[in-house]
Image 1: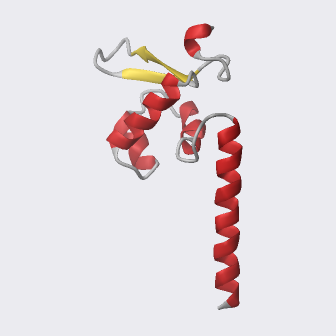
Image 2: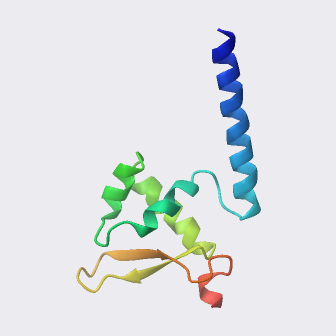
Image 3: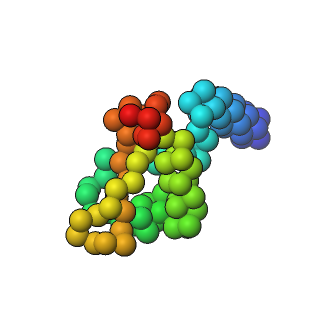
Length: 100
């Protein structure tokens, strides 16, 4: 039982550390898992990305909106599918996309 308590405490401390590190860059712990997936194969639908991240598509859309508003990623129109947009990391992500 003591092991389980210790494990829970370690998990809480890791979450607190992750929150603190994310806050340094102006993003949340919920937004961090998006980063490794921006290098996903081209043509990955947002619904497929949401499924990989185990969240609802609307939740992912809101995360992407916030990342875009804060200048971390940029959206571009997809040449092959008009209503679809591609998201990619900005060339200089610490500077808002519109400022580059």
